Amino acid sequence: MRGNRGSDHGSRARGVVVGGVAVFWLVSLVAGTLVPGYSPRADYVSSLAGRGSSVAVFGIAAIAALGLAHLGAATVWRGAVAVPLALAGLAGLTIAAFRTACPLGAAGCGTPPNYAPADLAGSVHGLAVLAYEVALLAAMAVVAARLARTRPLAAALTVVAAVLSVVLGLNIDGSDLGAWQRAWLVVNTGWLVAAVLLLSPRAPRGPTPPSPWPDGRAASPGRRRARRTGPTR
Image (cartoon, rainbow, N blue to C red; front, side, top):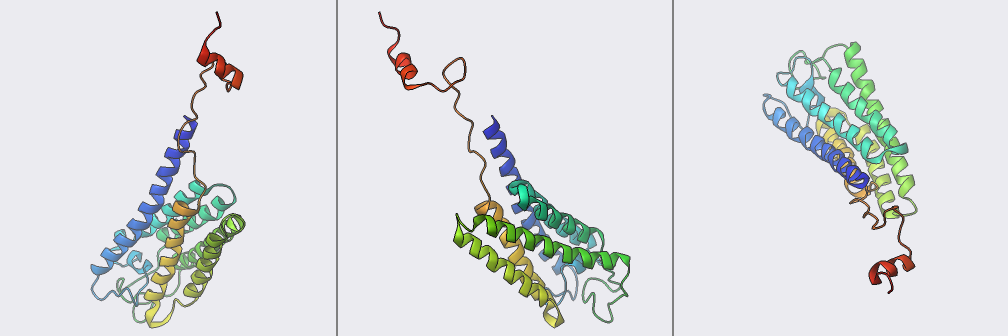
């Protein structure tokens, strides 16, 4: 029964991760089409959730789903990997809760004239984004270290994902900031899904077969022969 419970929990947690990532991308893409002038190439994803956005509810839901996906991943991995994944998830929920100001709506938010001076919510939002990236990079580093001996290719690809995440994150600026941010998020969410579906340790697939002996001990060869042949006459 323990094996079944562990397997069921792992399956549910993996479903939370995949479902959360899918909801994030689907809702953010659909919400963007509902805002006149909003450009996935030029605008932040978080602008959809901004204060003043006409689709703020959808933007908040999308970002919160991504945060929950990271929390789900923390329950799949556990141990040293779980801590930074959980922190990344909490940072994601903080990003959803503390929203930037978009006085003229989601389109062009953060650039003149649709710009507001930084306030407490905006500052917390920015710090949470930084905390998210640091936490996810820490999770990648721990996973790569764990897999270095047993699965060197997976470890190397995790390092590549970490490097790409940093490079893309540092380029989120200018007229194409939305495209850079989405490329950064593709790397991060793609690695997260791969981490729980392909890289994480698997729970036992089924229960341990019950022992045929009343005391629950494994049968010795002699006892197995006695069970097959029955008592001598």
